[in-house]
Length: 149
Picture 1 (tube, rainbow, N blue to C red):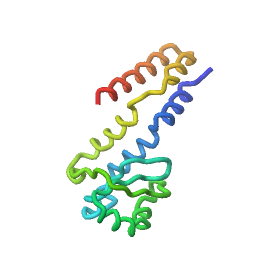
Picture 2 (cartoon, rainbow, N blue to C red):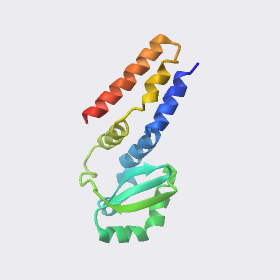
Picture 3 (spheres, rainbow, N blue to C red):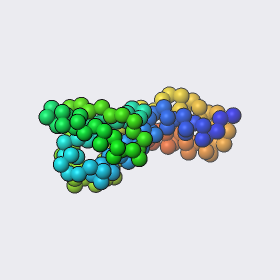
């Protein structure tokens, strides 16, 4: 017998939901962590384990932020970030005025683009018929919504 908790735990780990939630929380709090001067030139783009990939908008700021790496890591201690990688990339210009929830939802939708095939297969082993149907509906709905984006 497979419990629903087992299926959901494995699903969230496999599709990167845990990392996505952590990154979404970090992006939502980014403007509170760093002053306007810094956050205007850098943005948390991706989380791989405990390594944060930060996009920087220019080579000049890449060099400047490389010197500030230890300070940046210190400010990110509450997020269990052990290291960071700085690279040239897109830095959203609207991070000061955009609602925090919108930033978080973008990350979550991106992480749900594909549902592993085993997720629906494992649901067949959930004995509670009603629970199995609800979980199946949730997985299909999330997958469908993420495909629309």
